[in-house]
Length: 175
Image (cartoon, rainbow, N blue to C red):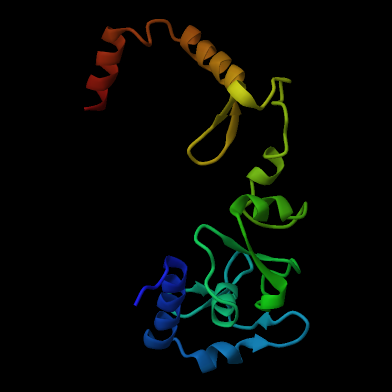
């Protein structure tokens, strides 16, 4: 039998729910059905519902159970902006970038890049695009011109910092 990757991840989630002490009857009992299906179980510090010992996200479980597998690399976005809602009619799988852009101003969360992703220039007026844009491994956007100037100022404040003798002394001091 051939099972695609997305269907396999949904089946794994279902298996974990049923065989690792996660009772589906109990899961459904933690949902208060109204327009938004409010999660009445454990809520994490960001306001999302969690279920079971491993703390799987409740909205992802309801999406998987009622709609199907979540595509790889996608987030499940709350269209109603209620992080505790698990109603699949209020959820939509989207890319991480789309999810961040949809976050309304002032909404609590970890979307530090939401404001910076819309900037077209740095605070000194250099363009944040093309050859002048550096994206760090953690996703922050930096101006290459400003980075170059900061590095130059660092080196000028410390004469001899980059000489081989100074480098050897720093390495020796670490040991």
